[in-house]
Structure formats: structure tokens, C-alpha cells
Image (cartoon, rainbow, N blue to C red; front, side, top):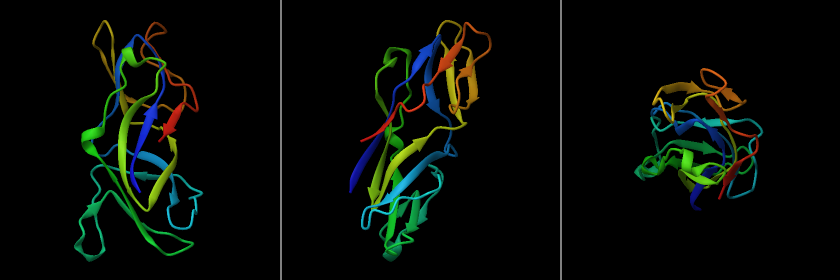
Length: 155
């Protein structure tokens, strides 16, 4: 299958360096089996810190899963070197924030949740544990980070 990039488009006001924090950050995705096309009904998460051995000693992946429909074993790996922040200069543009190595599992939807951090543009104040499911207010109304719904692209 190859690599699939997750792109984010956001409106940042007075903040920059919006990023996922830590190896335990949860990337919530809906997956599609590359063999039969079955799409998961529930959100599943993968984390950088998780490593599952592949059958036959062929390495490891962030998630290994057997398809409920066709029983094929599929896997997906977070490529740690591709994790990037979304900065003030990226405002209102799509930017790749992570890539996944897909072997039979294809992410088809992304749901951001908690675990993001950002910094104040002028103050440098670090805002941690930001949840991107809703409009987020950081400190006072002058410091706002808003991520409009539906501005995620898997390509």
C-alpha cells in the first residue's frame, strides 16, 4: 500500500507550533482493509510507543489487525520522523503532520482529540493537553486556537 499522509488545515490566532505530544499520543483513525474494502465502524487509535511483532518475524508495526470480513492480517506503522508541527505560517493551508506506512490497513478518517500542545506567538507560553474536538480557547480571548471541523486530509 505504501505511505499515507495526514494533512491538517487550521486557523491559528496568536499561537504556533501546534503539535502532538509524546509517544503515547493517540492518533484516532477509521481503517479500511486494503484486501476486501471493509471499513471499521469504530474509531481506533495507534500510538508511537506501541510495537506489535508481525507474523514470521518480518519486523513490527504500531498496529496489527485481522480483518473481521476477510481474515487477512494487516498492519500500519507511524513514521516517527514525519511528525511535524503546524505553525503560524501554515495558517489556512494544508500541511502534512504525520505519515503512516500502510501494509493492508488504510486510514480513511481522522478524529483529533486531546494531547496536542501549542505556544503563544509573542509570549512563548506553552499550552498543553489541547483537545481539538472543539474550538479551543487558550488563556484569554486574545489567545485563541481554532481548528475548524472537517479540515483533515488523508492522501
